[in-house]
Amino acid sequence: MQSTTASSPIPGKYWQWRGHNIYYVRAGEAKPQHPSLLLVHGFGASTDHWRKNIVKLCQDFEVWAVDLLGFGRSTKPKLEYNGSLWRDQLCDFITEVVGRKAVLVGNSLGGYASLCVAAQRPEVVAGLVLLNSAGPFSENQASAEPEALQTQIEPPQQPEPLQKLLGEVVKWIFQQPLAQFLLFQYVRQKKVIRQTLEKVYLDKSAVTDQLVEEIYRPACDPGAFDVFSSVFKNPQGEKVDVLLKQLTCPLLLLWGEADPWMNTKERSLKFRQHYPQLTEYFLRAGHCPHDEVPEQVNLLLRDWIFSQVSN
Image (cartoon, rainbow, N blue to C red; front, side, top):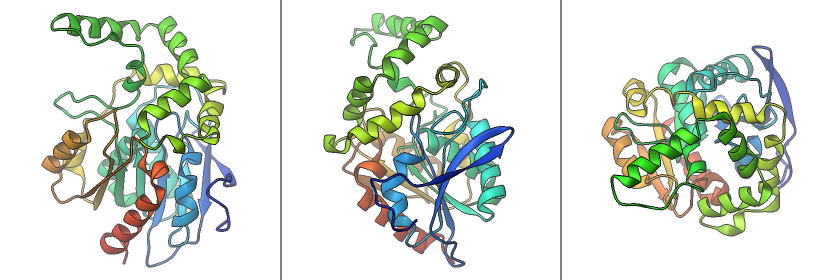
């Protein structure tokens, strides 16, 4: 498996969790002196999004990547999707499949789910790496996903209070089942997926046909709309600052500073306010730095684990 190239698919397996098929991949061998890594994708993505990282990181670590329930090749049942559900999935995966503490590495929505695990199930986590992590703070700072999908068709900027009123109207519209269905049909088109990726990737050449296909394919699975709708309807979950107050493990933040979906400098200050002992780097990339500048992310991740987490 270590000979797999960054562009070829990595063979995976299925794990049964609460009666559902959960897809995962594994590469590399467990090393006593280094922790295992568990890579967790963002909204609409999958294990495929980590292919450029797995092929390099597995040279030094045992690397796992998993499709969250409702995404990728995992089952898409009609459930209430939230941070608590994915927290339990990831915790059980580490316990039952990985079999030892792991460093959780999460992008966006996957970052928020990983933070929930590290804060609320610390016994299975050796360290935490967040790449442009989503999730709300108590000051009502919005998550990057899935609200970012709405920005594609929200009204243009208007003076207050009209802007606020229009914003509330848009939010109400997208709570309606028909509007959610139409929005889902719109955003899962390949051309719209490409347009969205080109907005959030600084390097447009990284938006390949393969990447578009990897996001499009799971959106056509049975149950994909139910997942999309549930994420819109359900509460976002525990606030990030509350989770950070519970966190005890080493924390690395990697920011794609050109991310248009979140103010990375502002979020960085909030993270530092609530967890000042963290380590962080800003990279010339967008919302998914692990896919856009994988060489930099792999090196920073490797060096940080060697210095902060490994025995």
